[in-house]
Length: 205
Length: 205
Image 1 (tube, one colour):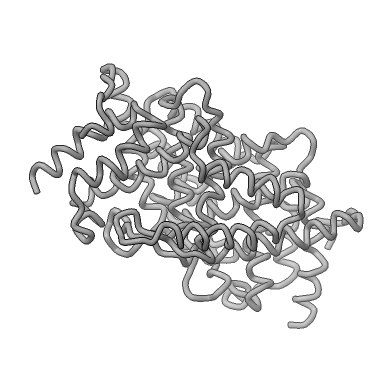
Image 2: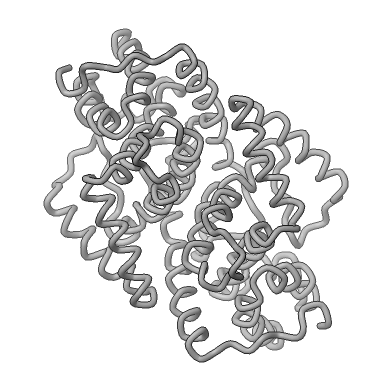
């Protein structure tokens, strides 16, 4: 195999780290089988959490100019990259469904313990800290990331005639609380764009 | 709706930019319906290009330490985020399938013209430049991104008993050329880890 020789020699530490990193990355394949409440815009099927994660990272990259000056988009992208991986063990809790939030938090914390610890210890700590920051939603990066996470589903639902809103019988008041509050906190420009479209949609129902 | 008032006022320029940005982001939903040659590790279905894009971004973030010192991982992530969006119009060309590469390049260039130009002009130029850089595979960032893009499918196939290799009747020589060369160029440490596993797998076939 002349094209790729000579192979370099891995150090024992590189071998050990790569074995763990690849085990984690293989396990992550399961996020592609976690289904969300929302459907694709073409209504063909439910969206899964892996493709959702890609889509909101694209939202964050494209909409970066609408973030506050203290938001670091590269960190936001890393947060969004891992924000849903706990769903591999804990499943997705649809925003408009009936969920026991305390029980869900316990399940997600246990999932984070198992999944991040597949990585080498230093990476497990760094990724877990980023996930904890996202969940706490206190920092500008986490608040913008949360706002972006809440923006993608309504943009799709508006385009597909209501999507999961119809199924869950959602009202504008519920949208305002569950979607409007976190978007307005992290990205008021996005809520100012989205709010009139949502008001108009729900006024016609 | 007291929680989210007062709404801020958008400038006319913000309104115009957001209309275009959101149109682009909605159009991107279609990448979730572009199917690749590879299957999920659990073999339940083919992988789509949106969830693949998420997965390789996670590969890049976790494997960043194995990149050369001149690689900027934040740029690599942005490249991987958009690297496959042209498939919305051009479709996916399976690496082990029979593809007219010249015709595919034309289709992908036309797709890039249409899709990136949904964005405001400044963003269209910036995203297109990043995609062109990835395609050209000349810079350290693009070469690492290409290496990562080639690493995820064999890691999955090794774990699921061969996956698309069986379907396409792939040999180790073909793997070496199509997978080994780009991985070894952009991330020799990853190829040194992967090569023995691949040699062992194909020796047993």
